[in-house]
Image 1 (cartoon, rainbow over the protein chains, first blue to last red):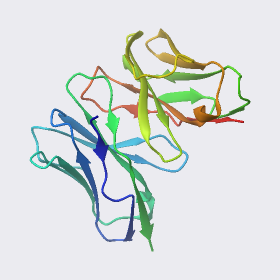
Image 2 (cartoon, chains in turn orange, yellow):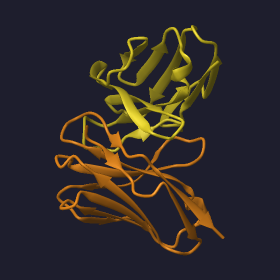
Image 3 (cartoon, rainbow over the protein chains, first blue to last red):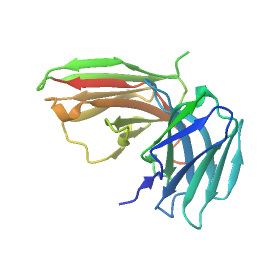
Length: 112
Length: 113
């Protein structure tokens, strides 16, 4: 079946460094992608989204890059802070399908 | 103000029991969802409702029965609970169907013993 996956299950970065979290997806028909952050004991929280007609979108300290040629999505976090420590998920949506398909998640650990 | 709230936050129950989880959203969204997160943090959709109508049922055992009394509420009833039902269940809502961010509740950690 279709899947959304991540290359790295755990990523450790030093405070102040930039983080890059990667995601591979296999459904070429997907046209909407979201990054979520999930802190311990909480529900997933929206970070940033991107539609398939774009290849880059920037938010506050975060940037999402979409490469449709290789079906790859990445989340870049600038100047990573301890509060960024969480599990990060990419998710995809196809057309009008009323569901998001989630990747397996990457745990980001920020060291001091 | 909690946008998507679910109760209870924790639920411990014995095998064979029947239990319900409630969810309410005050965002004015017309689509609501139930997701299940397993011990490996994998999130998988179970059900999706749009304006009280079931539109997605992802091969979930029929022991799980969602009910939407109105578009602001989506409850999940589980009959004859099994050990494998232990997980965190998340309610979510979104505006419209597809192609939009979903807002998640804080989750209900269900433990079946």
